[in-house]
Each structure stands twice: as structure tokens, then as C-alpha cells.
Image 1 (tube, rainbow, N blue to C red):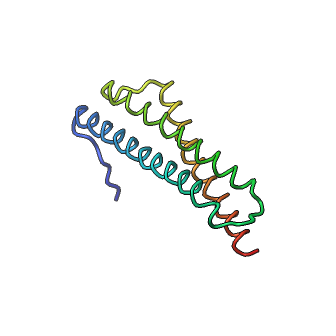
Image 2: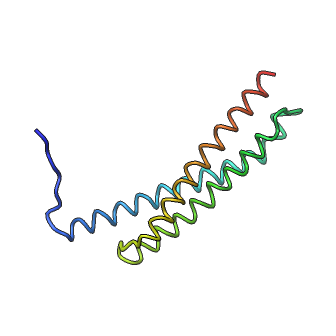
Image 3: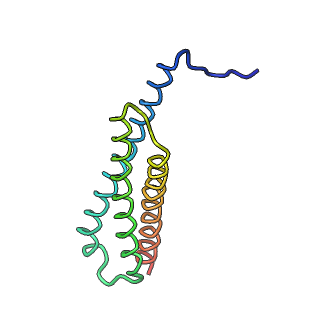
Length: 126
């Protein structure tokens, strides 16, 4: 038994699409906040926790990846904002831009967190 969800009208489908865009916008807003806070905390507290750190190249990678995530999130928010301003009409070129921004935002924060964890583990246990 399969239950298929159908939209009763085109208007309802359009409203659901707009709500989906708003959720994307909020997602990127949260990623922007996380990336910015992580950059600031890392820059502030790094010197206090590690007196003579090893594998410092990982910190550079972490900063770069957080920055990539931050910029990609902001660009994705602009893209979603423009789509919302156009009443949800998204062109193919803007969809590609949004997809690229999503990959950059998510990939950047994941790469940053992985390199930060590796750096931390290496320096805590040495």
C-alpha cells in the first residue's frame, strides 16, 4: 500500500516550494553563523591551548575551509533570496549556482571540522 502525497492546487504547490526555499535560507544562515563563530573562536583560543603545536598546516586548512564555507553560504543565501524575490521562480543557471554553493558550504565546514579534529587529537596526545 503506497500513499502518494499530491498537492491539491498549483497555488499550494507554489507555496510549498517557497517554504522550501525559506528552509534552505535558514540552513545557510546557520552555517554562516557556525563558520564565523568557529573562525573567531579558533583565532582567539588557539594560542592558549597549544603552546608548541605540531601539524600546524591543519590549522591553515581549517581556516581556509571555514572561510570557503562562509563565502559559499553567503552566496547561496543571496541566490535563495533572489529566488524568493522572484516569487520562487528559479532559473537553471541559478539552480546550478545554488547547488555549487551548497557543495562549497557543506564541504567546507566538513573539511574544516575534520582537519580541526585531527589537529586537536594529534596535539592532545603528543
